[in-house]
Length: 328
Image 1 (tube, rainbow, N blue to C red):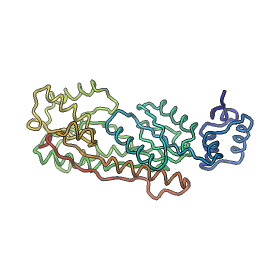
Image 2 (image 1 turned 90 degrees about the vertical axis):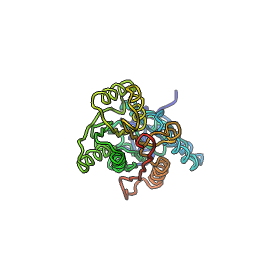
Image 3 (image 1 turned 90 degrees about the horizontal axis):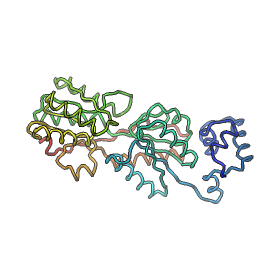
Image 4 (image 1 turned 120 degrees about the vertical axis):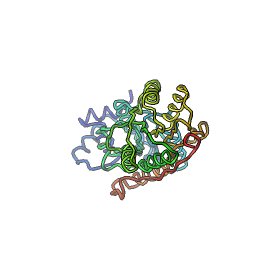
């Protein structure tokens, strides 16, 4: 039976993460720890994949991608762009679908370490995973704060919602609801709710928050949206993603509401798929390809010089309003 990274860790009396850091020479490790790991590797005759290939004059050139789901149009487009850019630069990917499950994400992290990836692009939503702070691998994050030493790339979430609210106001709305996740966790996407609340104060309208979690099923979202439209009678809804905005349009039709005469709706993301199949939807478009380019650029910089101090911790890219029929 082939010796695994976990066998080396058990033999040396250290964690799998520590073994990976020793092999990849990432971060500070004591000579004593290194000696224990190398001794265990020798006794078990263990040779990691990347080391074996480097001895043959080859590199693994593998990048791990961890995202919360792969069917969502936004993540699907972002992943595709990242993969295309990495492939052009000679890298392959291992795609991990974390599905908002901390334990599943932990399992994927261990798997990526065992496969000796050169770096990780993380976009999962499972916060508080201490392994990210201990990996010793080059990591960049999309839209989530993982650790002080992990750079973040995101769109201008604040400006996006500000544009959305102003579009609804200019379209004649007076009772504007915010439809999204209201839990603040210290992440860039929290700026969407913050922008809505600030604009409500600046423009002197009463804020109304209808909470739906990103992880809620379509059925649960439909029930919440139906009750909001039927009981609260908003004339404008700003949604934190396009798929939720489409559900609002569907429920509005069921209730006999006319869009945009009775109700105006604006989404967030602006993927190619949404613009193609739901071109009637006004939305805030994220610069998905630019995000992918910057994520890859930062990661490759970290790979080439992992110990270089970060010049910047948070990169924010501009968004744009795509105005269409739902806010006409």
